[in-house]
Image 1: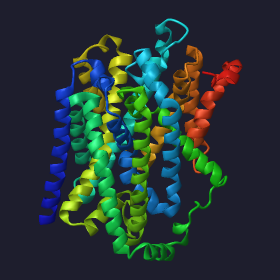
Image 2 (image 1 turned 180 degrees about the vertical axis):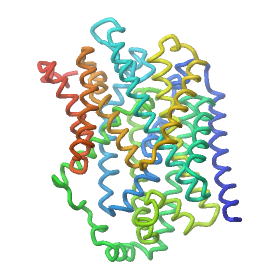
Image 3 (image 1 turned 30 degrees about the horizontal axis):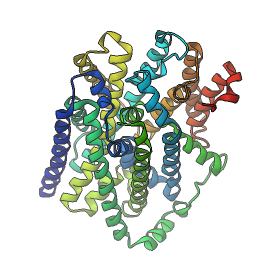
Image 4 (image 1 turned 45 degrees about the vertical axis):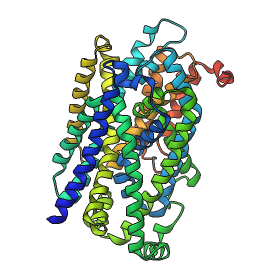
Length: 477
């Protein structure tokens, strides 16, 4: 009981620190929708890079990713590695132009950016804006619900609270972040949470590695449990390693369909600072996923019963309780919570922007209505989180994939300022979703190639068929 009290005190102290940062950010805010949604396009590149990393990896890394490593072993490393490389490519070729073009056409949201019509009146793309906004709310809302589930799993493992209570606490904190200063509060707190994520993961990895007896002992013990756990290359890949790796690399590139990450590129203070933000994001991502994989491996040795009698996605909190003193357990719980909430608040803001700015034009310039939209969205996200029993890993991958396939190809074309007619744009979005779902659920081929690759390819093929004559000059600009 005494240990739980110390854990609770440490956890609450970190939460108060995050809330204080969010409240302080409100001193910089302006009561305008542009400031609420894009921080007046004046975000420091260091904050941009750190917050993008935190909101990208989130509870997926702490809960889902570590659980995935626990189950499959060392071969899991290719997923975050390919993902990070794909993400880096997107920052190199898409994000700089996104920042520039979005300011030129005065787009405050991803959906309004997708709905632009370069060669005609602005309202010609209205239908694309509406459909992409609905897709954003549906699937980014599901994505955000996965973060609340991740946060609740941490609270359940350490305090024994039921999942529903943890989900509700997470939702209340998300609302507090969003209301305190909009996207600026989200980015500032995400940056602090990103640093906490790195510190907490490395602390637990080092302690757990020592508990295993070092790298040599860890390797020997994994081999004794199951020799496949130390294989570098995943076993039983239907089409071999290269298609598998390529699929996950394209999944990482699928960040071009994630509004909660794209908005950070749109909000940075200068186009010229995109490269610095990209490099910060890339380095911090590498620093983060290495200990996450290590924790998954050490947990398989130190907590062997999770595979059969519990949830492998609870490896991190259970390992923390087993190995760390109370104060550091509080740190780890704060790290889990920070990772989940850092993504959820960004996603809720992106969904509320889609609702208030894109679906209800009459609310576009109302700061008050933007906040009302935030409450509506968090209610939807809370409902999804309370009724779902799926794993964090599965929820995140599915939501990310659908958003990447639906919005990614069209965003790439818009960034490169290629004309896309309304029927073609809508067909691209719908085709991407259908192909991704069929590939994953209907054909069950995601273990061979992640569904983002065929889904995004299908969107580009639709555009190519409709506009085949533009392909020779696609990269001419």
